[in-house]
Structure formats: structure tokens, C-alpha cells
Length: 212
Figure 1 (tube, helix red, strand yellow):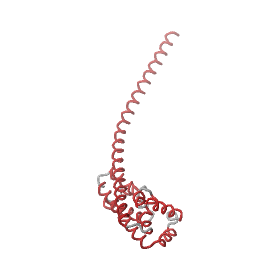
Figure 2 (cartoon, one colour):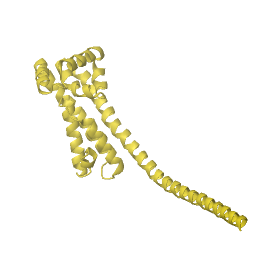
Figure 3 (cartoon, rainbow, N blue to C red):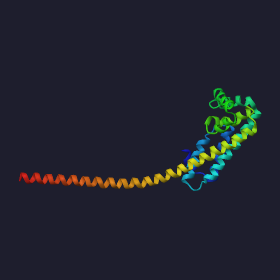
Figure 4 (spheres, rainbow, N blue to C red):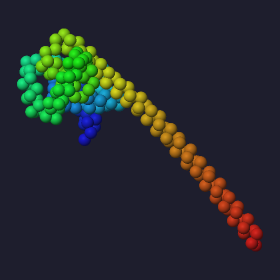
């Protein structure tokens, strides 16, 4: 079953909670499809009035900020051994190569790596724990975390929601246009066939008159 189809079967409150929890766990450092859940929920909100996009965006934002903050605290306390443990637990996402790439990004961009990392799937998982491991000053992390969480979660919800609304509106218009076009094509085809049949009859009549 598709994610959006499954979301349609649960109440709105459960959707808000699910989005917040999944994004929070992803931000904490657990590889989960947070973005897929958010996009699917925002599209669902554009099609069904039961889900409030503002509440959905707030839930996603809260999950992102809280999850990253917890990840930062865990990373600061766990240090390098935490990264080694995550590498054994999730080798696909926390391999030495991925960690090295993330560290270079943090060394080069600092708090901007936390902010822009929110928009990159791999860095979104690393941002909180790695910022803690690298002992980034908390005030820098907090600013980047809050702004990045608001812009990514709120912005994604808003964009996907309005795209869904516009798309549905256009699809409705297209369905009417398709119906009109089908009728016009049918009428045109019928007129062309009638004209060809009329000409064929006239030709047959003319041929019959000449031979009689």
C-alpha cells in the first residue's frame, strides 16, 4: 500500500503525530523517510479538508527542531564512540565515508551546515548528533536548527500543499476540457464520415446512371 493511501485510513490527529514523530526520529539520527511522510501528508491535506496544513506544518517543524536538539545532546554526550556505534548499527547511512563527508561540511560551513543540512537527506540525519560530537556551541546550533526546521518543514508543507491544490484544480478543469474535446472530436468525426458517405453515394448513383 502506498504511503498516502495508508495515511488516508488514519484520523488527522494520528497524521500530525506520525509526521512529528517520524521527522523527530530522523532528525535525532535514525534513518527514517521523514521527507516522504511529510510530502505525502501535505498532498493529502490538499485533497482532504480534515487535515489542517498549518497544524501539519507546525507538527513537522516541532518534530524537526526537537529531534535535532535531542540528537545534539546525545552526540555531545556520546562523542566519537556514538558515531562508531551508529556505523555498526546503520552501515549504509553512517559509514566512515559518509561521516567524513559530513565532518568536512561542518568544518567548512559551521552552523550553516546545520541549517542547509536540513534540506539534504544524508545531512538531515547527521546534523544534530554530529554537531554535538564536534562540540558546536549550542547557541549557534540552536539558531541554525530552529531556522532550518521552520524553513524546511513549514516551507515544504506550504509548497506541497499549494501545489496539490493547484494541481487538483487544473485536473478538474482538464477533465471538463477533456469531455468537451471528446464531444467535439466525436461530432467532427461524425460529420466527416457523413460527408464521405454522401460523396460515396453520389459517386455510386452517378456510376449507375451512366451504365443504365
